[in-house]
Amino acid sequence: MSYLGSETFRAGLAALLLLIAAAVAIPSLAAPAPASGAAVAEAPAPTSPRQPWSFGKHSLRDVLTGTALSLGLYHLALFAMRPKERAALYFAFCCLVLFVQHGFVGPEPDLRGASPALAVFLRVHSGLRVLALAALLEFIREMFPRDVDRRPTRLLQAILVAFALAAWTGWLPFGTRLPFALTGFSVLGWALIAARRRRRGALILVAGMTLMIAFFAANRLLHDGSPVDAGLPQLGLLVFLLSQALLLFRRFSDSMAEVERLSEERGSMIERLEEERRQREHWQELSVVSSGLAHETKNPLGLIRGLAQRLRRAPELSPHDRERAERIVDEADRAASRLDDFLSYARNQEPRPEPVDVRGVVERVLSALETDVEAAGVEVAIDVVAGAPPVEHPSSERDGAASAIVHADREMLIEIVLNLLLNSLEASPPGTRITVGFEALDSAARQGRGRLWVEDQGCGIEADRLQEVRKPYVSFKPDGHGLGLAIVSRFVEKSGWTLRIDSDPGHGTRVEIAGLRLAGG
Image 1 (cartoon, rainbow, N blue to C red):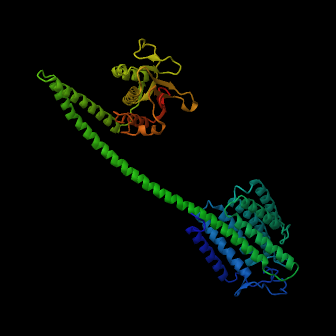
Image 2: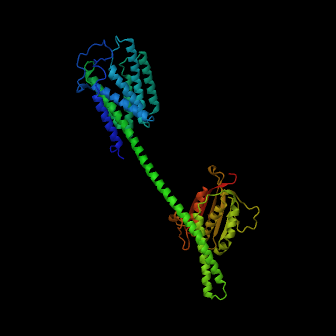
Image 3: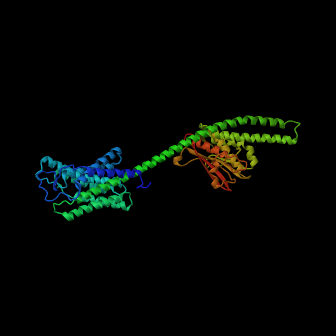
């Protein structure tokens, strides 16, 4: 979103223009005063016109006074709505002090002949003027926190507080310009640093400060020692106020634009989450229906298999028909196996952890796959603890063999090892080796955890297929159904573990599951 095209910025700019218009329309809040100030009735009358700068019946001083009051109250309201925006509070304080200065006190009041109460008031206001400079420094630091060094700012603020105390005690003359010069050039320097670093809004502040200093310098050069007030200081202060107001408006505009962007992102995220929730519910319903359908399909499959077995044993059956009956039994077994895999994948059960012997699980699975291992002509080894010598299955010496106890769902862990070994057996050529291993993790962050892996020397998986093989019904084998790794991924995710697949095409694959919690860990 571009800055000038922001709806928030246009609204803020319109509000600023309305404030300026209101300031021009506000009548003078103080009676016409002589150039030496309206605070003292005994002051001599001016020897020349008050100001040549005017807007209708209102002078430039009236416009400055109204603008300062309007901006001060406006930014006080902004701070009340957003207390974290302390820059608005500092700017409001500066505006209100400027309002009192030009609305009631005058540029340089004469304390000669003033009553004690009026003298106290003028001293308090003189100290507040210096404190407003300290607030201005804090305003600049809030606007450019990465460019304004905190230590020099605090040192300069301490000096200004000392000046304020001197003003309150009467040690500092009212017209002393040293605090204003220090503050003005410090602010200009920091604004130039921020502008050089391309900070947003820095050029606005540089322009305002430069014009204000130029107007003050011109007034001193052109009218030094003259009673004529050319209005240049008031014009410089007005320009500076407007530049700071624009700087704040820009900040608020950027903040509101960010809020609008985050709100839009939040709305789209809520819509996306709602859509995902609907899809998840839809898939859950389909999963329940599909699971029921698969379960009901197994019953007639069992009946067909039983009839085919009886038919196969019939003595009068011809060899050709007996072969067909055997094929029916084989196909029924294959269909039942795939239905079991589907039900295992679709079953939305939560893990029920219990102490499980990892070696016992691996040996149980290998016992069930003993025929498959022999048919594949591969060697399977168990390496349960890092550093322990692999023990080939079947183990002739079970007693004393290295093992490990983990907290896991026994049936899920059996399914994981079974599917990983089946995949490795299908991918491994005769004469190769498959290793099933488990070891504890050594890192301090993973103490009490272990990892299980199955590594083969088979054909491997292409790099662009590593993520695809985890999806259900994605298989790159001619007779694969693509549920083995999908089941493993589902169970690993539900158990809070992590799955990693490393493969080197033509040399083998390693599937590693990390995060298994050791007993006592």
